[in-house]
Image 1: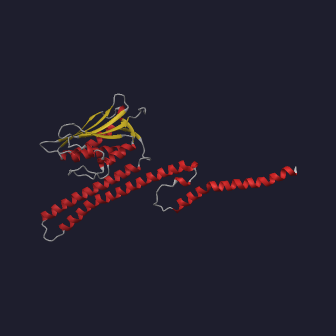
Image 2: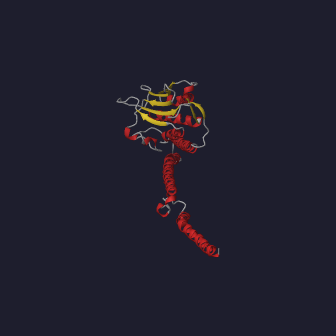
Length: 315
């Protein structure tokens, strides 16, 4: 018995020691990885070197690197957005200051003061509009995962926005109207946030009013529609105008924050369409742009937002 047990008492501690050494050696790369991550600066989002980790952990490191890459892109986008926002607000604020300084000069007549006050009022309206658009875009981006969803009648929301925008359209001699599915139709409902959906429709209508030339002799035309397909699978929102349209090369650019169509003098902050796209994406909808009258001058523009109708079976 002694001849059998004695070698086992010697071998067992050696085996435990060898296993422990093997474990220490195998997890050393993980300790090195931990030390490298701890030593990083808070703003260092560069990829982790996957060469120093065991093969079994490599997929995890690749997933973390993918997350870091997306975070880097997101932070860069936010920085550009903040820089553009500061620039957009700086222009009207500088105009306010300049007009105020001119109005304070000695010898200004009452008529001059009225003129400067009108300029100050216009600049303040532009600044307020830019701030409101920035807040709307921030609200749309932040509400993606937490927004309350209820059954929304898209036709009713659209008609409400059209009614609200009619006075502004009339000031520009624009014929603004609604046609299509009437409120209360079961097939024109979507699951979403009514506040954000109204904001989306309002920005589409405001954009059309801003960019549609119109006069008393030749009024512009803007039409909002809500349509359903015969099978009840898709709900379509359209806002079309009789304006100059959008060149093919700019149709993706106009959905970027602060981008404005080249050669335009229309009022706007360049945030309306990015808000539309963001809200549409939050509702799993798509946004497209097409010409109202292809081949004619002016070609017009038709923005189309496609939703999955409530109760539709996903493809």
